[in-house]
Image (tube, rainbow, N blue to C red; front, side, top):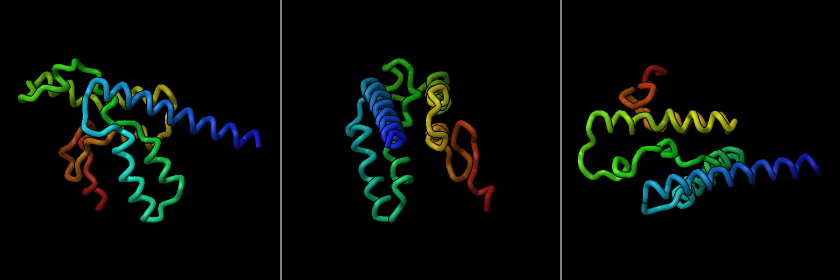
Length: 136
C-alpha cells in the first residue's frame, strides 16, 4: 500500500509541476484556451482509440511545449514579422524547454516531445531538422 501511495504522490507532483509551468507560460503568452483545455481533445481521442492508461497519462502529463519561451513579451506577442535575431530567439524555445525539463528529471518521452514539437515530416523543422522520411 505504501508503494501505491508513493506513486500517487509522484503523479500528483508531476501534475502540479505541469500546472505551474503552464500557468507561467499562459501568463506570458495569452491564448484562447488553457493548456488543460487543449489536452482534453487528445485525451478523448486516445480513449476512443483504446490506448492504454499509461499512454493517455503521457498526454495528460505533457507540459505546454511553449514553456521555453522565456523571451520579452514584446517579442512573444508581436503581430508583425519577426527580425532575424528575434526569430532565432523564438526558435530556441524547444531547446530551453528541453533543458528545463531535463533538470527536473521529467518523463523522458515527454522531454523529447517538448524538444521536437517543431520538427516536420520533411526535415524542415527545428531544432534538429530531423525527417521521418529517412525511416521509410
